[in-house]
Image (cartoon, rainbow, N blue to C red; front, side, top):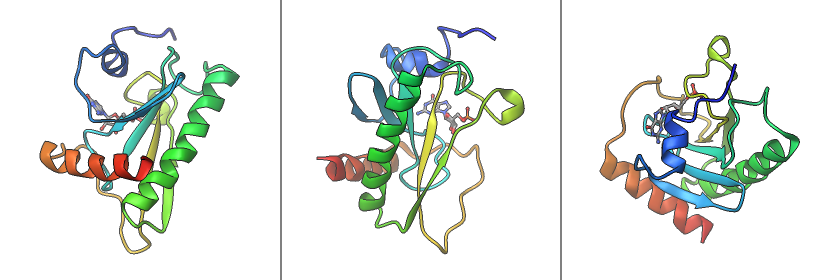
Length: 138
Ligand code: 5GP
């Protein structure tokens, strides 16, 4: 399977599609998931192309996981969470829908289940939640 330069996250990285950006460094980029399964659900991606964990380089994996850890702390602080769920899917059979490596970072509370997938966020609410995370990162 090859990398498709026109996948939606490649377009976000090129600035062709808007997103609620939270953080970037030399190697990674973080933004809010548009269909959040928990308040503060965000996505960590490498800036360089790869489909998923299976074709990623050690450098891409390392950079992403360091940013995942950073975002885990930030979303926990922003939402007063008790834990964090990290999800990462590989190929269609593995549950992947967008074929640019990404890690889901979801702040969790013991008494709150994840919402079902596929519900579009209210963009005003998404921005408010992003503001909280950006403040926690500052
Ligand atoms: P996966 O490939 O791991 O199954 O999930 C892809 C994720 O990308 C989903 O959680 C979905 O809500 C999110 N997503 C899909 N399209 C967009 C988009 O255009 N913008 C943003 N911010 N997230 C998206």
